Amino acid sequence: MMKQIEQVARWITQAKRVVVFGGAGLSTESGIPDFRSPGGVWDKYDPEDFYYQKFISSEASREKYWQMATEMYEPMKKAQPNPAHLAIAELEKLGKLDCVITQNIDGLHHKAGNSEEKIIELHGTAMHVTCLNCKKRYDRDQIQKRIRSGIKVPYCDDCGGPLKPATISFGQSMPERETEEAYHRSSSCDLFIVIGSSLVVQPAASMPLVAKRNGAKLVIINRDPTPYDDLADMVIHGQAGLTMAAILDLVREGLGIAGR
Ligand code: NAD
Image 1 (cartoon, helix red, strand yellow):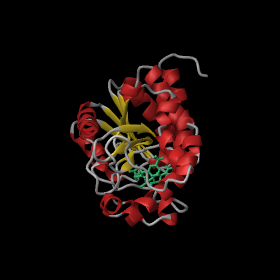
Image 2: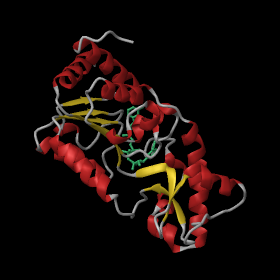
Image 3: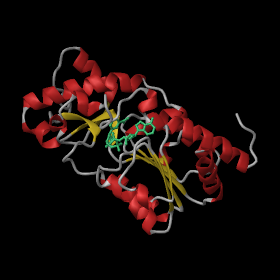
């Protein structure tokens, strides 16, 4: 594994545009379960209940959704960035990060110190709430306060439309600006590093293909195999935190910067 880590560090040092592409596996070491691993979200909840069409179909579905979303939000809000998030934030400080494209909704790249313009949230964020009708945006905590006070389904102050966490549910269209930006960055990078994603959710999972087709090197750091392992220039089946911390140390060494 050390040889692979050294190679990835060397590629980062040499690359002009490094894109990091993260999934739920990047945040499991922060205590947020992923979807598909044992003990993950799909062991506890029925994926059907997360569909957008279901959310808009009835008051009862919205109530169920808000109940699940509240249960998931509380621990997410308390979670702290782990060494993988911190390493990615450090890559930005070293001038070695074009952007981080994330499928996560937990806001941990912001907490780790990456700047707003470097973070592309493909599946939205759980830290805000939007009105499905007039698109008014609310801070999530403000709405959670209403839920705690006994309101089961929150509605917009301005137009009365249904409020939903600003995350992209199954069946909901992808955010246009973020998706375009992610494709653009993926196609113009020279190193694309996947961290903690099963790479099965579309269209997010097509980003590594776009990068590879445009000549980038593809690195996959994931605990379990992914459908794109055969296509990658390097696959590391390991923990995101440990692997990224080790890579960062070698990048610093390669750039002639003393370690922490
Ligand atoms: P996924 O659950 O399909 O896959 C996670 C992958 O990460 C798995 O292949 C697993 O082997 C790997 N993994 C788990 N822990 C790891 C670790 N510590 N180090 C390295 N690899 C690890 O998740 P996905 O590919 O991101 O796609 C599913 C959807 O999950 C996304 O749309 C995302 O929005 C959503 N999601 C987000 C969060 C979050 O915001 N933290 C949490 C759960 C789900």
